[in-house]
Amino acid sequence: PRLSPRWLSFLFRTRSSSACVEMGIARDSRHKRRLTGGKRQFYRKKRRHEMGRQPSMTKIGAKRIHLVRVRGGHFKRRALRLETGNFAWGSEAISRRTRILNVTYNASNNELVRTNTLVKNAIVQIDANPFRQYFLHHYGVELGKTSSKPATKKEAPTKEAPAKKETTKKETTKKETGKKETPAKETKKDAKATPAKKEEEEKIVFSEAVKTKHARRLGDYKMEQNLVDQFTAGRLLACISSRPGQSGRCDGYLLEGKELEFYMKKMEKRKTAKK
Image (cartoon, rainbow, N blue to C red; front, side, top):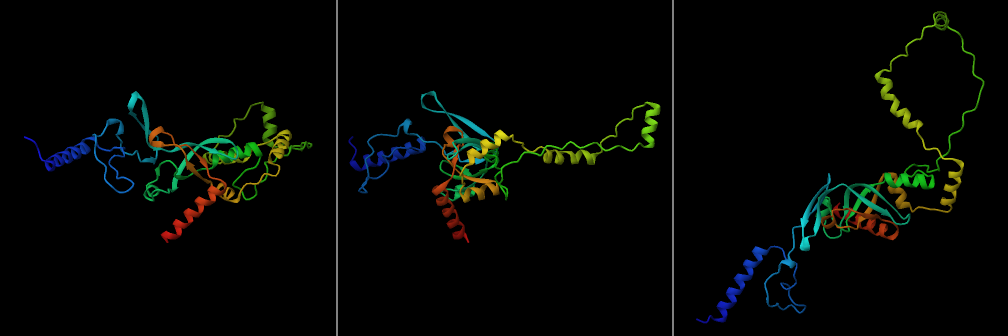
């Protein structure tokens, strides 16, 4: 028996709805309306190549990556947790691997900021130490200090006439007997104090040739105040340019110039709005 158009439309709707349940997330555009607002007809079912998957929602933590097999036998690297990434300093034409501290701004959703979710184009705070070390070795200037002057060479110790030692009773007895005294054992207090002393002593020393090279490189170099403030705080603002859920990496670049000013204004607006 021939079915009425009403029954046919009912069957078509139920079939399409069951297909939605089975297939899950789709990336097609046939389910959307036309530009004028009219509905489109379903002239075919969903296809496997139009399939979508759940978002990875990458968080900050110990590295955890899952492999997902995709079309053609290839694999995507689905990052679930990441804590480091390669970030480029554009004006200096260098990149360094550094630690990601937290997410500060996301234009698409504030919830991604609250949950510290790493996605493309998110603004994050990163550790400034690797870039600070580069600047010290390349320009001889230690950033993050109140007086950022080039590292100076240690003064060579002057040769002075050694003072005459007064002979004590112990020394006279040593000479007489000819026996060697055992050195005194280091106490726990001395052992604890040694690392701090070593840090003070182990300062970078540059030769005169390296100093001239640093002076030539510096020239009239001036760093913008926003970057200087970030280096003193030890945290730099950067933008993520990779897709952690697809490539399993969280790489990006430091914010500078007008782009940095733009995002700082945006973050200030959000802070004032919360208050």
